[in-house]
Length: 391
Image (tube, rainbow, N blue to C red; front, side):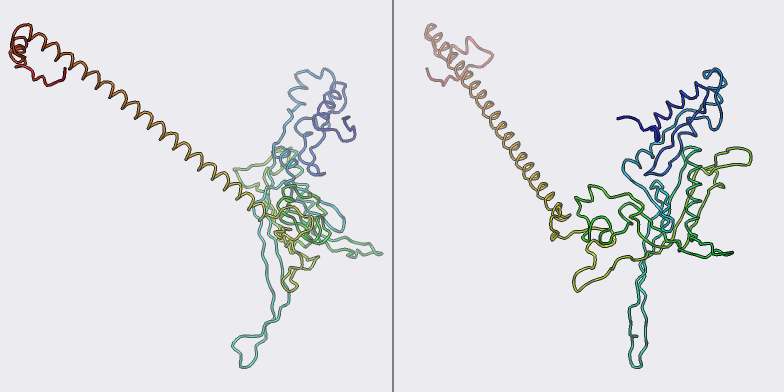
């Protein structure tokens, strides 16, 4: 596939930069892309920023002063591959920024608001429902592996703070607010627009669909307003430090941001008798079996997995019984072999005894002596033998 000259890959841009550097042009490299947004820059670690390379490109001056080795941060590739992003979209301008999902905290708080009217003679007041508020607290860690990433982290955080301000219209000599600064925040599948027609209908996702992944588009974030934004630059943290860029210029190596976000419900949440208004709930999870054309539900998959486990367990138990049977058979065969060897040895010993008895009797007859006299004479140390064996 041919390389797009307008948007070269980091490797292609790096090679092009080498060629331009040798020819005396400015050396540059394409920035990483994080879901359409600039990530940290290969141009800050693999290029000469704003300087011309002339003369012998491989001279000691150019190599030691102008060229810095290319650096690749593994978290970029992982975030791009898995689509683990946190996005903020400014609704009036449609501007959005994307951060890698180094999440420090993600908390939800629901608050139901009730009106209470005390009535004479009643112990408890009469409650009337007003509304339910949903608040999200999100904390992100923004580490910078390079000066380029630190530069862009600072720029993105600045853009995020600008998103707290509205759109203005100039009417004569005064600016008038034309649109309030509403925000869409997307935290993967945990915080996104779950309404009808958002991206998966009105029924939510089954586990199989969730395995297939979800959209990472910032436009599919959950609508609301940021009520507070805290930014910690950590420049006072000696364990983190800063990038010393130039005279009077530094870049934070590690930033923390905390956001308090109040959700604006675009779709009805509640109940109609025993049915939820939106079956997928706030996380778009559907465990029902009634979806037409749906994949297996999580419960079905669990049951199938349990069936596979039970089958594997039965096979394991059968194999154990078969092993025990074979071991018993082997032991019985070994015992039978041992009995055969013992019987053979006994028969041999008895045969030898009978042969000795017959020989002694023949010797006694030849000498004209009784067996006892013959053995007492021939084997005085034994005191004679008692031969009771058969001929």
